[in-house]
Length: 187
Length: 267
Image (cartoon, rainbow over all chains, first blue to last red; front, side):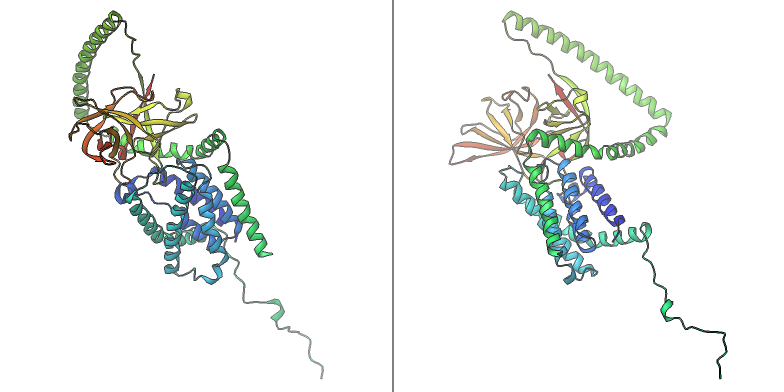
């Protein structure tokens, strides 16, 4: 892992939050605004280290709350609570399979708004809730599930195009070299 | 060791979240505005990108069409001028009558045009941000309207931008009046979560004589919204709490789903 991947994830999170605030097409078409941060957190938890997960939780949550009427900091905990369990158990997850990414994206995208709503309601906030919220939650879950494998592909492509390439180990090894000598063998 | 590092990192994130959530409201608002200002360059870029197709379309518009538009605008200008003269005469007459009856004179509100730059990314709030801030004289609780009707009120202001909480959000309650014979009064509260054009008018008298199509305007109570701003039309009504009071659904005049430009009212 290098710092480039962290920068890439944070840049993507920044653009995702900006896009969610400015693009109203999903709201018009699907009746709900989609959130890409949970899907991005799935990628970060499965491919990067703790500092990146912590940074994405804090900065992603802060950016989202700054552009929203949410209390500042309320979105940090849901993102962290999605990232950590995935990070702990990532060795047991078949993270390269698109289906696994799809399922994890769905779970993360369903859990993030549910946890945020839980925290907001626990804080005594009055929210715009109703039967339509259930539809919005389904849309957020479905779109999050579909976009997660794409985010994995996109990040991999960006990393291949812009990041440092891994050093390829040559087949030649100095300790395996057959020592030849011009000296004639003595009879 | 691995687990300890994990817990430390998680603890640090939880600590940051708790500190942020327990900050005083004023400090949180300032911090929110500071973090929100990181997006200003992107807002600028986005605005320029949206303006570009319009500029291109203007530059290739034929001369004949431009002349037609100028002609139409001239006619409209003449009509508006004559209407303005009439309204000035009415205002003068109104002032004279108010002086005669010793009534308090109403101060006309000033209008400032603002562009909607973004919407709330969360589905459980109904807010937008506009490109006016404290440098333009904006402050909290100023009413925001369109030419169709009421939109909401300013909820927080930064130097260059302001957040407007829209009608239909739980944090924007409006005292409203139905334009019927009994002048029934109620409070506008949040409506449906999916349809932004419908809101609920509640706490109407149980004897309210409501019919679909009746106009709803601001009542002027509450001292945030001036009296007489059109809000919408009654869709239907029902008796609630065993006939204790009446609720009605109101279809908003302003299309909150596709707001582009709004007017901020200054006293």
